[in-house]
Image 1 (tube, rainbow, N blue to C red):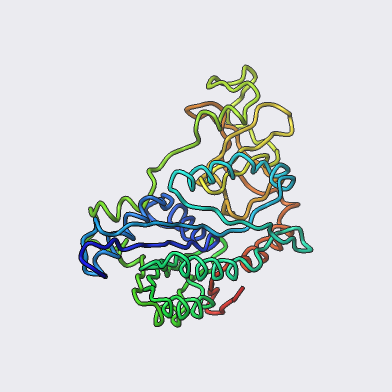
Image 2: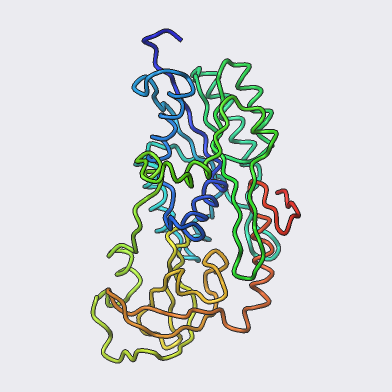
Length: 342
């Protein structure tokens, strides 16, 4: 590379993988925040500059693409996901990330799974690199199936950087979940970067580059709150009684931000709940229309639900859904030492 040339960088997101990692930092890690696209891109530029031995001003992300499965419009409407999906798409647009989607496949039990997304990512990465001659391709994934892609990108003259995360955590039911990056992928790429040790490094505790990897912690917007309350007020309903145990169903679930809304069986205003108010279940285990019990309370913006539990008649069904969800990942999870490859 000549001294005045720009180092052209392309970033390819394995969407299901990135979302799982981001959820880990929101729900399991002390950061309690999701990953920021802009923060990730700033980190990528700095890391590429260091690895290539050039000034960061000469490194530019010229393309970024995000690959994920999506619900149909009808499915998203039935689950009240249209707004939250649009919010996520807005975040991608603001970060200049192109979104590649295909419909999720339905399982017999009613859950969904992604198929062939990794193949599409590999084909697009190879074709785009062939046409645009990227200098560095950044893969955000942990899937060993991308090893052949790395070889092909190298034959085109592109160096490949990997951003991968390895972590483990204990679920509410006591089971230990582990996520690992394929060793074959680590060995094959030119610039492997394991992110968790960098983020947890005490020496970088006040490193702006690391801190900016995360979004500021925040609750629901006023628009989202009003959209889920018929009256839309910050004041409490006239007939509100605090501390009463009620039943209701999930009518809006914004799992990406860690909260949702419950419609009580009495037909009154919807109740807001946060992931921290769930008992014996995680927010990723909830589904639209799940029957729950909760205790009425008051919050800064109105009525809120505390001590939210799945109703007893949902326990068996929830176990089936949880088992299905654990198989719906685009990377390797290890549960009690047993690897489930999807």
